Structures are given as C-alpha cells and as structure tokens.
Length: 437
Image 1 (cartoon, rainbow, N blue to C red):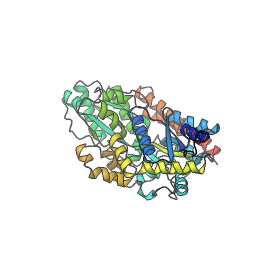
Image 2 (image 1 turned 30 degrees about the vertical axis):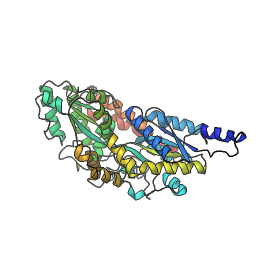
Image 3 (image 1 turned 60 degrees about the vertical axis):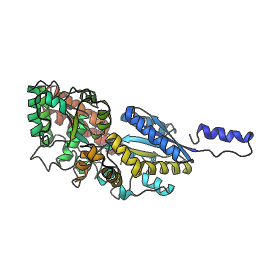
Image 4 (image 1 turned 135 degrees about the vertical axis):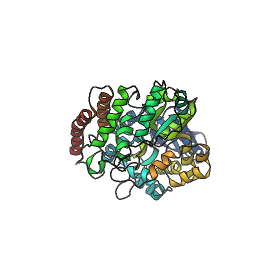
C-alpha cells in the first residue's frame, strides 16, 4: 500500500475544494511485540508520526518472532510485503541469502539522505548485522543479552545470603544446593535455553559453536555444540534438573511467569526481561552478570546479542524509502534509544545513548541495569564471540531444544544429546549451503 486512507480521502476531496491536501506517504512496519513491549513500540511510532507531516508509519503485530518472519516471507511472495520487517537474530543468514527481497540499510540511508553514522553504533551490536566491509544490512533494534536475575526475597526465605557471589557457575551450584535445602521449590529456571546455555555459553567461554567463525566466514560450516566445554555445562544442568534444583518450563520464555510470580530464586533470561519484571514483581530483585565456569576457555569474555533487527524490504517507491530512512534515523536517535534502553532493558544501540543514560543518573538509581552493557562491551569480541550466522538456524535451534529436553528428562546424556544435535543439524546446513551457492 503506497498511500494511507487519509491520503486517499485528500485526493478525492479535489472534487469539492479548490486545493488538494498533500497526502502523507505510508510506511508499513511489521513486528513481533505484544504486551508492554508492543505498547512501547506503538508509542515510538506515534511520536515519529507526530514529529513530521510527510510520512505516517503504520505498525502491525504479526505474531512471535518465527511467525513474523514467515509472514514477511509469505507477503513478499504475494508482492504484499511491508517496508520494514522485524527479524530475530536467528533469521539473519536467511535474510542475507534472500537475494532481491531486501534492500541493505546502508543503501536506504544513503539514498534517503537521512542522518546515519554507522560508526555511532556499538560494535558488539551492529557487527552482527554488518558485512566484513562494514556495510550495515539491517538496523539493530531490540538487542539484548542474557543476565542472571535474583529474587532476593526467595534467597532470604531459604536462609541464603542474597548478596553471595554468583559470578561463577561453581558458586551458583552451591547456591542451588543451599536454596533447595532451605525449602525452595524452584531454585533455578531459564528462558531461551539454547540461546543462553549453548549459544551464549560458547561465546562467553570463547569456544566455537560452529566452524567457519560460527558461519561468518562461509556457508560451509558445521556445528561444534558437542564440544567438551558445552557438554560439561549441560551435564551439570542435567544433574541439577534431576535433583530438583533446575526447573524446566519451556523453550521460549515460559519461565518468566514463574520468576515474576516470586516462585523461583534464580532466572537466566534476557536483559529485556527488565520491563516485565519491574512491572510485575512484588519482591526485591537484582540483576547480575551471566555466570561463567571458572577455568574454562577464556571466560568471561563477552556474551552475544539476541532480539531482532529491522530489515527493509524491496519492491517500494523511492518516496516510501525516504520515509523508511527518516523513521530508522529517528529510532537511532539518542533520546529515543536512551528511553528504549531504560524502559525495556534492551541494549542502547549507540554509544551516545548509553552515555546519555549514564549521565542521567539512571544506572545509579536502578542498580544492575548497566550489567548488560558492561557484559557486552568489556572485552573485544573474538571469532567465537561476535555472534552466529548460520543458515536454517530456526530449525536447528528447534533440534537443539529437543535434545536439551532429553538431557533434562534424563533420557540422554549430555554427550549423546549434543552428538545427536550435530548429526541432525549439519544436513540442514548443507542444504542451506547448496541452495545459496
């Protein structure tokens, strides 16, 4: 759709008025946010629309991340694609391989003339969506990284010091035992198990998740998730699951409800859990860095991002792309990014927004909210810790989830499960490689 209903009425009104009103150019934005995050996205769109008279952005919720990606693919095939599509980080390689379906952000910004400085974006965030030549393909939008959430009241109820050192998994192991002995029925719960306990675990410990620099150096990559370090971590978690110290609730963020209700003491989850936890938790909580295994790899190095970026779809008019450029520039502005970071727990995508947040006193008033930023930027990323760029990764993550569930249930050893994940996942990588040569 190239013009809004308001614009159409304005054109029609020329039959009755001496001068036609100028129509606003419409920009369609499809996203995967509902609840509080959906409200905040809607507020951003409303603010942009009110800030100028040339363009009107229309935001639409299209389901969860996978559903939104599939909706965008189907719409492109039907030539009904939006201008902007939110795609989770798992879909990055798929979008890069979709020749003719997307228009790189750096080209959109150059052609539109909108304010855009690729060097202003945090490298650990933008690098995920940027070519080796430094060209940004999609705009980082809701970038998060996993952290450890602590229910201080649950610790005290179990007679455990909530200020104990939880920086290492060795110490977390001790905490889980003490919590269980103190009567806790849910010492530990997690969200996004593969993202946190395999993808980020590998990056944090500087061990490869896959060959070819985790896919950045070529499509002919193979999974390495059955490595010694990954297997040892999953073996420990499987033991905790059998002992009732780790409670498994689901593959996505089902565990968030358990933590926000006060049921669980520890929660490994995205930094973006801040919005929901702050709104719903009726207990004292704080946030700590994601734990690491002391003595394993080069830990702690840096975690990697989750969340999504904004891809610009092909097939629209130049005037509409000018509106896309202005909207993306608006989303990147320091004020908008600082507010987004503070309201949600997502990372600020620019250094300026992070500095503005610090100067405002937000980190001092909300201790722990700077943890995610520090965790991502404290060390220079390596080939193992700059992210993942694997084809068919949504399907591969599903395979990994199935195998991890077999560990938690005691049906497979960690080694058996990860060997199976590699055996099942590599053929998907080969098919993706062959389809995109």
